[in-house]
Length: 408
Image (tube, rainbow, N blue to C red; front, top):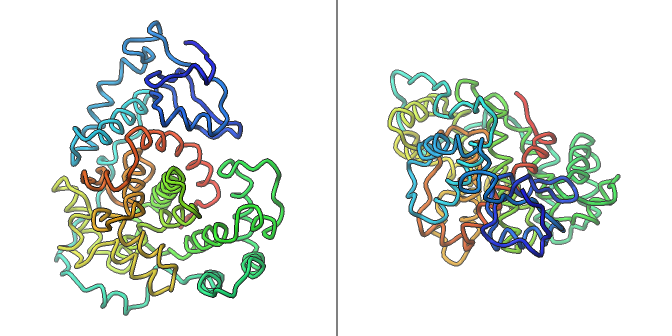
């Protein structure tokens, strides 16, 4: 292992030790291969030197313990990615990253998602229903807090000011406390501590903080989902990971108000929660059939339920009068190819894929959802950027879970 200056690092070098920025945020894990995009990330985050692996450190540049378990880890990774084309450069790079990550994990390894208990298939099987019929019913998963509706009014009123947003948020003490904890976390990496919502608005930005506040407040609405269908901690872990990935990818595209992508990721599978809560027998049949057929839950939704969870999520957000961009990103997160000229749905699709690939919780899927070559093209980022996003996710996901974790 050799520690060298950032100016001497070159693409293809393999990291010998975890690299973190000045705030402790994990940028790269031991075993990761540096790409041109990765070197730019190190410079952006102010990293001055890093330890890299020499030939003496293990066969193929891997530490001996990782090399010894790499083949087994790759076999498990291939099974997880079996719906993907491994020849796709993005998929190949991500699979290798996942295998290296797993091989570097101390034994025993976490359980395979496919080994989790599956709900009992309902008998008789329920018939498909229409989305319109479900939306006419009272949603069983909870009631939105009043602060959410007031924030929606702020978003949709061009006359609203930053002071209006700060006043609404400040009146909800629990929401204010959570937002201030996030603002002072490594998620933002701010040097000066933020003590008030007014200060948070001025530092982070009105739109960004309102987006976060909407996402945090919606999390509290989802209650009463049958436990045999989904573990809520696993569900929110998956959702948070998707949101973190979406924010990072949007940042790589230099998109404005990247917090809206975090919120879209946080809420991307809310339609699936609604299906579980409103149509529990349809949910049980979905999960049982997907497991027995070796496919994704989403691929069976239209035939079994009558509509997809992304359609359901978009429709709910439309009913709630949420911003159109949030509604669209939730509704299109499984169909990035259908939106020409925009990379936003592709960002959401890849974020969901990353959350599943890295096994950050689950909303019901046990396989990594497939993405077409057109979807990867729509993302507009090279394979190395996707791998570096996976690297950056880890510390941020763990940090945000502490603040947004929801229990039944």
